[in-house]
Image 1 (cartoon, rainbow, N blue to C red):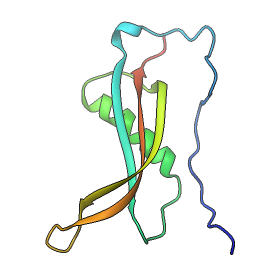
Image 2: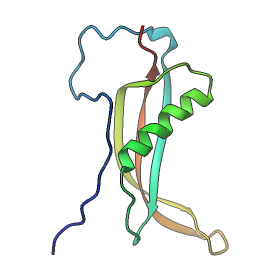
Image 3: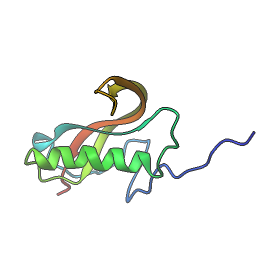
Image 4: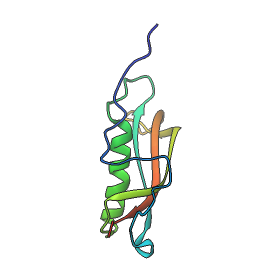
Length: 106
């Protein structure tokens, strides 16, 4: 049986190494969070990681941070119970969570 294939995301910039000479004001860095979830047993959407990162950036922008780059990022896949559509009873969801510092490059 073949595993399903889907896009996790597309990114303007990404690195798992420390980037040298990254010029930003660390005093304005704000810790932000975002997630993308789908109900267990249903097909996941494409670009889940990208949507979770977009959600984290929007979280910071909604808080008034003038930033568009996440640094010191942590990405987790977790199982959560969220209110379902049937009387709000909890249902299992698979979520990708993104947490990082939102900054603006100088």
